[in-house]
Image (cartoon, rainbow, N blue to C red):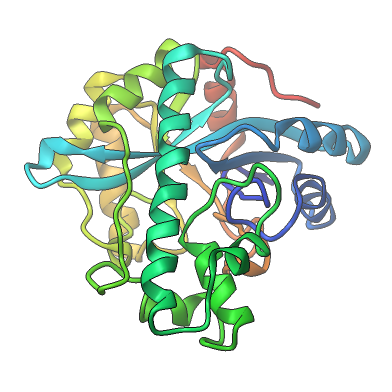
Length: 282
């Protein structure tokens, strides 16, 4: 079993990187990717745990970007695998994104604090040192304050796009990000490209542009994709000669997603490894 999309407390997961690997191993996962948002800070801890539990580890990140080729700008997430974490262009962009995520969270908490019992310290209590801060942590603070029952309720109400509490954050251009991942020796895969419940999705023409820039694959098998969407994405991947991956997008107790609920074929992992700079830790 190969699961190439999971999160730890380095971003918005609820398990530490070490515990994430342990959970995966206990579930029968043989190769796991740690892909926290815009950060590699969980890699070292996950690597140590992978050695202890004898599980293969693909080091990666989920990088926020914006597809401006749509004309209106659509947020996309790119899973970057096996890249050089010291590459200056990629480091600069992910640091800028993380910094702006923090500023955005401060603004959202301030707005929420006008109507609900939530402060910045309440949010920080839901994070670890170095965590990439995002809306899920605001949701956790609202849960702790008794305002909502869980993250789902928070995102369905005050944290969704369009409310007076919502604030956007900086993200680099998607085409430029694909090129930067490739320049860093990495393998870029478009995460949940058809998840329309999360907001607007890009048209097929944008996937074509990303493929021309060096996109390696599409995450087709994902909880947020309907059977029809999976079929459509498979057809696109075939026509553009892109890899097809499947992943859980596991966040611990932060989401209902179960580790290993969608998986990737071994030959696809082999193709990713062939294209990447880093090796899979085993």
